[in-house]
Every structure is written in structure tokens, then in C-alpha cells.
Amino acid sequence: MTPAAILHAIGLILLALAIAGVAYTLAATILIGRYRTRDAAPATPDGEAPDVTLLKPLHGDEPGLTENLLSFLRQDHAGRVQMVCGVQDARDPAIAAVRAAQAALPAADIVLVVDPAPHGANAKVSNLVNMLPAARHPLIVLSDSDMAAPPDYLARIVAALCAPGVGAVTCLYHGRGRAGFWSRVAAAGIGWQFLPGVVVGLALGLAKPCMGSTIALTRETLDRIGGFARFADILADDHAIGASVRALGLRVAVPPMILAHGCSERGLVELARHELRWLATVRGLDPAGHAGSLVTYPLPLALLGLLLAGPGPLALGTLAAAAIVRLLLVLRIGHITGEDSLPLWLLPFRDVLSCVLFLIAFFIRSVDWRGARLKMAGEGRIAA
Image (tube, rainbow, N blue to C red):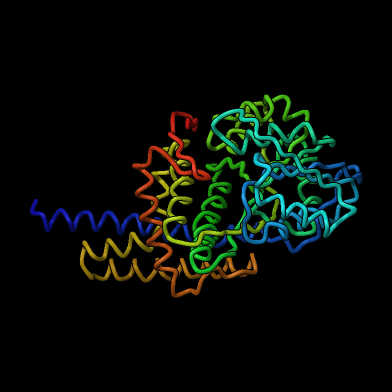
């Protein structure tokens, strides 16, 4: 075959992948409706609201941190709620946000733990190990500091955890830009790319998520899986906790609720480092699934297929279909979440950027995390 024929054949393959991506995007547009949260939150089976400890591992200041913390305390929940915030440095600026939350809600039960003791390469897990002794209640709800919760958050979490066979609860999330243009680009990547991928994966039984947005479980279940210390050298500690819960024969439930993840990236380099760390983690945990997710980029695939195969009816039709279904999905997500991350005319830019980072992630063997360079090993393990 001539070089031109080879390029044409590659273009046709890319167009075929783009067509598969169009079908995937249509499915995501339909399935995302399952996660509307407009209905009233369900009650717990026995009508009683258990006491809850919220764990908030913190590191550094970030836009809206105080507001994020307060959103988890302003809950329609009849049981007692304790929040344990943890830092590993007495000079950590996140302490000021905790003090501000205490001042805003003086009656709230907010505990601050400052403990530098390390327990492994994962600093967040070390923080959690240090915080856990301060937790007083039997139901533990761990969530990242950049999450914001609606007032019915705990009611939905508790109801899901009380269902038969459930050992843990996690939550979907979309992005919310908090620090200018690039943070909005990052937020669009979460809402437009990550969120529909998890929704489709859940519907097909291919995804078994357990995410840092929320990990709710009882103290008894946490003890049965070995406590937080077991995950101190694992990069994807949230995924590993979920896998350990499932190994007990229990499910990880995902209730119909989408939280808001505050994005704080201030430049392209910071955004790329963050997303490459996440993509490389997924690749390390599920190489085949990561490779198969190429079809979730129909617009870049169609653009490149058009370039290589030429502007024939197939290529132009595929590109038009990819653009239309991606636009429909983005509009649908904006309607459900109530937020628009970026102007719609930037959709091709965000999709191309996502696809480029996806391809680069195949070659990443170490990641940047909170200023530390971590070497990736097998089964999601890390070393400094």
C-alpha cells in the first residue's frame, strides 16, 4: 500500500471509532437523566437518623474552602453531625478556613486535628489515619475538601447506606470553576467528559466507582477492610477502599445526586498535571478500560478522520453527527447540574485537549501530587 492509502485507511478506522462514539454519546445523554435530584430525599427505613462524623482531610487553601465546609454542616439531618478536619502542618493555610467555619457556625461540632505523622506515600491517607481517633460517631462520611453538598446530601447518603447489601456509598460530581478561565476549562472536563463516562459505565455494569467526592461507610465496615492505614501506599485510595468493601460481598451504592467539585487550576500546566495524574491512575488500574474509552472522544476522532480520509460524505456526516450529539450532551448536563462551565463554542477545544491528554497518559510513569513526585507501581501502588 502507498503512504496515502495507509493514511486513508487509518482515517476510515478513526471515523468508525467516531461513529461508535456518537452512539456512546447518545446513550450518555439519555442515561444522565437518572441522576436528577429534584425529588424529595428518601427517608431511612426505620425513620431514625444516625449520628454522623464527616472527615475532611485538608491541604492548603483553595477558592471557596470555607463555603465548601459549611455546605456539609448545613444539612437537613436530624442526627448529630461531627466534622473532623485534619492537616499535617500547623502553618497550613487551610486552618484559617476551619476557624472561619467555626465562627460562622459556633454551635457546630467541628474538630481540628493537626498531626504531621506519616504512614505511607499517600499524604491524604496519612492525614486520615491521624484524624480517625477523633471521630465519635458510628457512620463515617469521607469527602474531599473541594466538594460542595446540597442540604439533602446526608439524607440521601444515609438512605442509600441503609439499603440491604450496601457497604459503602459514593457520589457522582460535576465541575465548578472557581479560579478563572483555566479552572472553568478543568470544570468542563469533569462535567463534559468524566461524568458521562461514569454514568454509562454504571449503566452497562462496566464501572465500579468509589470516589473521593464521597465515601460513606460504617466504622464497623472500615475496621473490617483494615482501616485507612491499609491504603497508605496506594495512589487511588478511594478506588481501593471500594474494592475492599466489594470483597466483603457488599455493594458500593451511587445515589441519584451530583455534587459540585470546585476546580482551582490557574493555568494550562496545572490543569494538565492534575488531569494526567487522574488519567494515569485510571490507566494503571484498568489498562483495557482506559484504552477502550477512546470512543468517548467522537469529535476529535471525527476531525482527525476527516483530515486523513478526506472530506467525503462519510467523513463530513460523521463530523456533523459527532458535533451535534456532543452539543446535546453538554446542554443536557448543564440543565441537570444547573451550571455551564464554558461557552459552547469552546466545546471543540475542550474535547481536543481531553483527547490529547488521554493519549499522553499512556506514557506517564510518575505523577505530581501536592508538590511531590510519585512513582507509579503495579496495582495502583506508589512510592515517593
